[in-house]
Image (cartoon, rainbow, N blue to C red; front, side, top):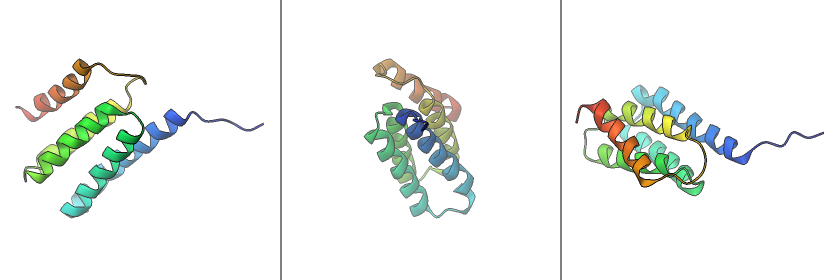
Length: 109
């Protein structure tokens, strides 16, 4: 008998795995590698309906492009990991704003 895995959980695990790998690699990554890692996570999230993760990754890409990335990256990655664990299904716009607000609070903005 074959075990059937839940595709949602597989993608969730891939996203959180990529987030964790990027977080671990940060001290040794060049800016281009960081940007590529964030973009990979954003695309995977977008393609699989993890809208909150996609939104946070997009904002992180903007922060990195603005030059103030080192202090913000781990905060965003933590929030993205939390967002990836959210229950499946459509998420109201207020929930997306709450994720963004949690990052702003953690960064002291």
